[in-house]
Length: 99
Image (cartoon, rainbow, N blue to C red; front, side, top):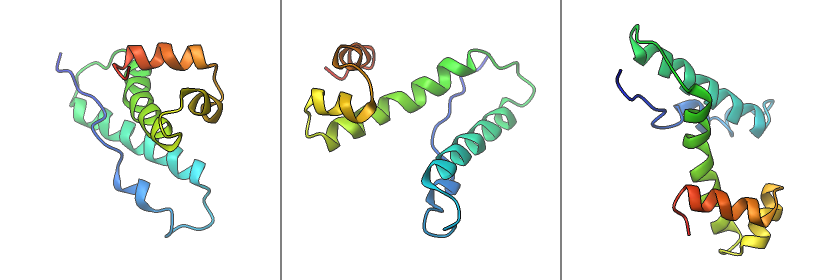
């Protein structure tokens, strides 16, 4: 089976200023849904597998990178922003080779 992943969020992620009645959370959810729809279309009849892990892997690393940047590399502050324990953040950073 081909290894297909979600390569990028679709153009709907850029609609924040165009659709004022939608919240930013709604837009993020819609972007993920659109990307998954495209993923299923790109499978072209192939059987999907491990979708949950794939989505988490696609979303988690860039989220960690961005939050760490916003926290100026301060792991304690980044963990607070994420709402997780600092040790959990460090484990996730190790998983994604961010240490």
